Length: 257
Image (tube, rainbow, N blue to C red; front, side, top):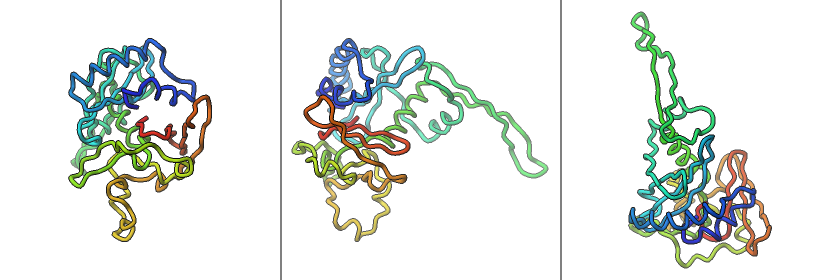
């Protein structure tokens, strides 16, 4: 959710009863402005919170001119002081999957360790050796944010446009989906590099608008997801999209949640 509309957006995302305290909101509204200026971001998004045993991690993301490239993730333990997370590489993701277990501790320097025996060589030359994999919690946090983004970062169709040069930017003329279109799953897109789109034939691509149809729609997900409206205390209905693995929360404005 955009830092400039944080107060409004937090209320829309609080339908499950989890939200931030008034002190945390006030701290974020100040610190995210400073974060945007210090790192020279064009936009700062409050990504959310990951709960730990000792402390919770508050996550923010900064974007530059292109909304999809060079996105940086940062974490804070107090909503004031922000620290960059390392990029989640394939090797890091593999090490985290192997070594990290249990809940987050809330200590970024906490180290997870996993030792296993591997066979090196073949036949009579095969030998056993112990391999120890170590990762710290900051790497695990970066991996968790990256994996959640890939699976659950969702935007309504038309909220972002792609220029002929390939730059992705917010669509300033987008005012949200109308109630009829908002109920159609094809109008929600994964905000990540497309996977299924690259597999489409020229015939399948012919009816798409390249300026707004450059992402994978949720309607093509396997397993299939479902869609439902939640009308609570807000004048505009919030939207919840559910699958067997993830839950996406949206309102009908171009917010990243």
